[in-house]
Amino acid sequence: MKRLLGFLVFVTLFPAARGAELPRTLQHTLDSLIEHALTIRAFPGAALAVGNRDGLLYEQVYGRHDYDTNDPVTKDDLFDIASCTKVFSTTFVLMHLYDQGLLTPDQTLGKWLPELAHLPVGQLTLQELLTHTSGLRPQVFYTQLIHARSGERLFRNTRSEMYPYRVDQHLYMAREVEFDTTWLSRIPRPDYRPLGPELFVNPAIDTLILNRIARGYNPQKRGHYSYNDSNFYLLRRVIERVSGQPLEALSAELYRKLGCTHTGYRPLEWAPAQQIMPTEVDYLLRRGRVQGYVHDELAALSNGVGGNAGLFSTAGDVARFCQMIVNRGVYNGQRILSEEAIALFTDSPLQSRGIYRGLGFDKRGPNSLLGGIDRCGHTGFTGCIFWIDLSEGYYLVFLSNSVHPTRTNKKLTSSGLRTKLWQALSAYFHP
Image (tube, rainbow, N blue to C red; front, top):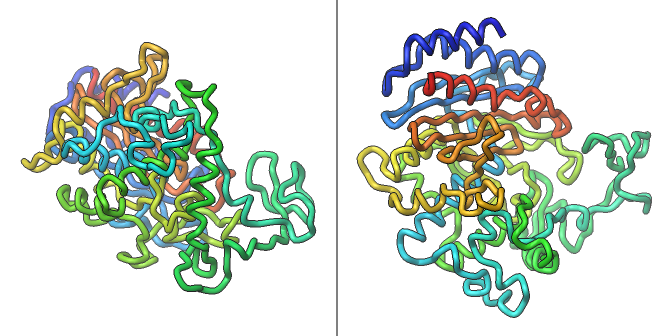
């Protein structure tokens, strides 16, 4: 605490110089916060990038890939950025399509997905999906694909020899499971998609997922905020119907404009495995260490390309996106997005109802340390965040693999590290 107070005095005496390197005192504060989280085993490794309108001000990496080896994290190592995909891929592409005049947020789901037009869910607007106010119910799909071999329940609330695997605070999974062979196979089959090195899924799963999402619509919840990956599953389908191209191809075009050479889906197709940070040792579905395959089950079932998750990247590449946003759509002298699209998607259209959410972008209310009318970004379940202050023109990117070796490790969240990093940075830019 004394160190942080001393730092605050320092930045009060020496206000921010835009475009200059961060002062060593601030670098030390950021490093110390992250290194403390390493000592409590909040994550094995992490990467940090800080910048403003003029460019990158500080970039650093910490720790190692996992707790069993001494492989240090490098700036080129790829992290599974989980739900940050919702903005860095899906929303980014939607903004691009908006600029091309191909869609608007007030259009309905049924307009672009006519197979849903006759259903109540078809009347939902793209804005409702983007702001998580659609009324769709959260869904868990893997429980339909696996069963306890004993015929008992798949989960129990207490640990035992038959239920040894902890998958949540008070939830344990059966040791012996069997796969529904309608959907899953241990050996490659024609057209089946890989979920892992030795597990493959029937592509007909797409129909099952879409039908369950559509049936999960609750009109009484429409207009109420409920964070839900199903919204972005549908937005991916809209993007691909509007454009006639896969989401990963459209995203890749935009990343080339930003010079992002270490960003994409299905990283094992374009990067060596040793360059990819491992995530969970998965007892739910893949029963092994997940490395190079997306951690999120919905994205994994979607061939590794989800509207909600699936993207792998580096702190430096995410920083390029953030710098483009703070420069109102311009990066390296090239216009990537219009100022109108930036303003529309980063606004809080439902603020008067107490819903602090942009179109795709996460925003927080005035009582949050991340809050502010011109502040936005997103977090990721794997231990990531990027956060932007549009009015002051600065940003923070923090990536980690806090779900390694298990998602039950909540030390990153309980430590408040991501918020503390933003607080320290904000104190510098708001002395």
